[in-house]
Image (cartoon, rainbow, N blue to C red; front, top):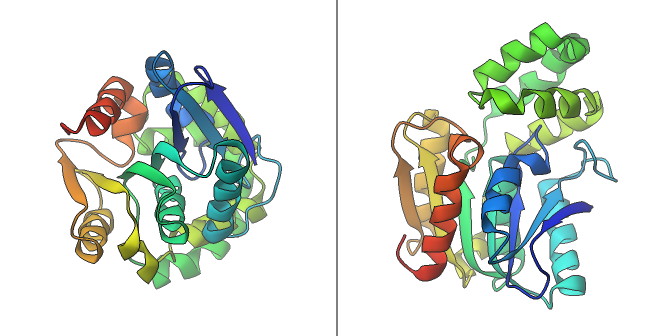
Length: 249
């Protein structure tokens, strides 16, 4: 697994895990806002542009990052955040290692499997995958994600680098992930964020996460769609991280 880093290594460490189909630039602006006070690490999840391994499972991604934290960061970090697929990897990390971090910020993570969507992924991408290199098609897809226009070139460049097998693999993992019982035992202070305009699946998932571990703190983000909190409102996202650490979020 490869990583982008910001800030000074002697500062306390924050890891931020990007969404499926994106890459480390998902959190670039937030990292720039936090780098004076923290050591920021942005892993590139397996199978994504700039990664060094094909995507296998959410569980293996979680294990890889935990191994990195063990080897380079003394076994734990201050805070881990994750969006969508990255949020699922974060939930899995919290399940695999109860004390992997002091604070966790889970954004827009699905934990209610969708059998129908999962079954349709392979045939749908088998017939349409070639279109991802069309700029006009990419712009339509990009608009549907409601990301700010300044990120289009990053999105287009990196989407073109994701192979069909990897894209199908992480989308199928994303639509089939379920929480492990061990998640209940996490010692982290966990904050769960979901946009007010998210799909019912994501809103129900946020509630399910908090039911499994009632100490979780649920935040409904007014007026926001999927991923907009960290991607389009990096200043608010960085502020939320500071407030979580200060105990006022």
